[in-house]
Length: 407
Image (cartoon, rainbow, N blue to C red; front, top):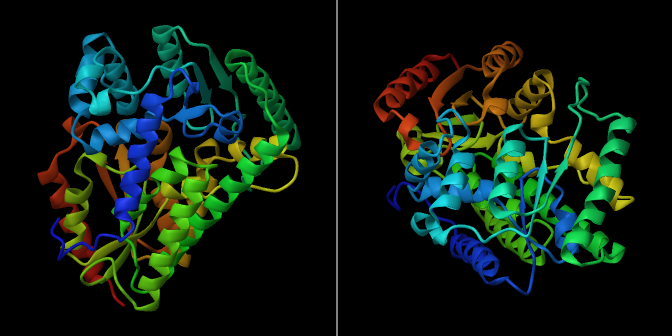
C-alpha cells in the first residue's frame, strides 16, 4: 500500500530491530543459553526467569505467512502425510523442521525443551509431541481446565490445579537445563510482563479516539513484542515509545487512514499472507479496524500476589479457553466502547477453536448491538485458501449495506 494511503509509524524501525534481534539471539544462543519452544498461551515468565530463551513457532508461522513462505512449507509437511486441514502454523513448523534450508531465517533453532499449554487449542499438543520426537527433546504440557462459567472466572480448584502444574514445570525446567529458579527474578519478570501488558492495553484503548490513530494491520504488527518478548525490559521500552507516538497522534487528531468514515471490529487471527492487500479493500471505503479480538488476547489480567498462583489464574483465563457467551459478550462490549459500525469475522480454516461457533457469536452480537457482521473465509497463513476476487465482492456488498444504514 502506498505511503499516501497508509501512515507508517515512527516506531516501525524499532519494532523490526527488536524482532530481528530476538531471532538472531535465538540462533546464536547455543551452547550458552538453553532454547525453549513455547506456545503463545504458555507461562513464559517462568521460562525467562530461569534465563532460558523462549522461541514461539506460532509467531514464526505468522512470519512465514507475511514472507510468502507458508505454502511451500505446508506442502513439505503434507508430503510427509500431514493433513491440509491442520493448522497452517503447525504445517509450516513441520515443513521447517524437515526443510530448514528453504525456510525464512534458516528455520528456528533446535529446542532443548518444549513447553505447551492446552488453553489455546488441542493442535499444539500433537504439534509439540511431533517436534519433541523430531528433536529428541523433553516436552512439558500444562493442562488448563476449560472455563464454563458465564463470568469467565476460573474456580479456585482450577487455579490450584494449574498452579500445581506450574510448580512441576519449574522442577522440569530446572532438571533439564541445570538452572535454579530465583523467586526474586520471577517476581521481577512478572512485573515487567505486567507493565508491558498494561502499556499494550493503553495503546489499544487509544483507538477509541475519533479518528482512530491505528488500523488493524498496525495492531497485528505491533503485537509481536507482547508475544515474543513479554517479561523483558526491551518489550516495556518499545511499548512506552509506541504509546508516546500514539498519544501524539490522538492529540493532533491524526487518523490511521486518509479519511475515517466507518469504524469496524475484526474477529480472529490476521490474514498474514495478504495483510495489507486485504485491508486495502476496506481503506477504499474509509473503513478502519479500530479494535479486534485477537490482539486483545494479550491484554491479560495479571494480578499481584504470589507469582505462581497469579500466573495460573492468568493463563487459565485465555479467551479461547472460555465459552461462546463470554466471547460474544466481550465483542459486544468492544463494539459499544469503540463506537463500532460493524464487524468482520474471519472464518479461519486453520484455527478451529477460534472459528467454530462464529455464526452463533455473530447472531448474538448483532442481536445485542444492532450492528451487522460479515463473514470472510480464508486461512491465517496458507494463501492457497484465499480468493481475493470473491472476498472483494463480499466486502463491497457489506460496505454498501453499511452506507445505506440510517444515521
